[in-house]
Length: 80
Image (cartoon, rainbow, N blue to C red; front, top):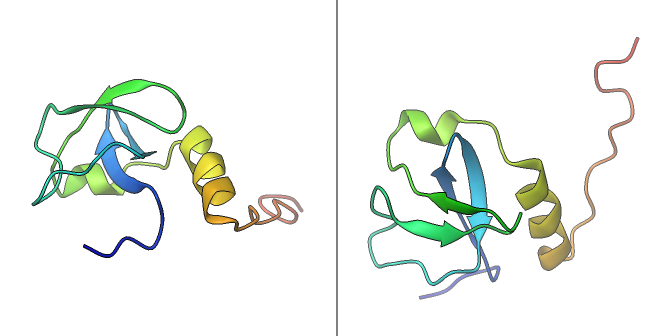
């Protein structure tokens, strides 16, 4: 299976988290415990609504680092 990055995303414990744990075929079943890139132990929630949760800032920063892609600048966001 081709994976463009060494991590995958999943909704868990109220946010979208990323992990380097081995992803099961067919995705993450509800309740699967993983170690997120933010170093939290979280449990997967596999639902349509859960994918709309906000992204964990710690996982997002670490995912960008692992992918070699700089974080977008926060300049101008919400500032007037």
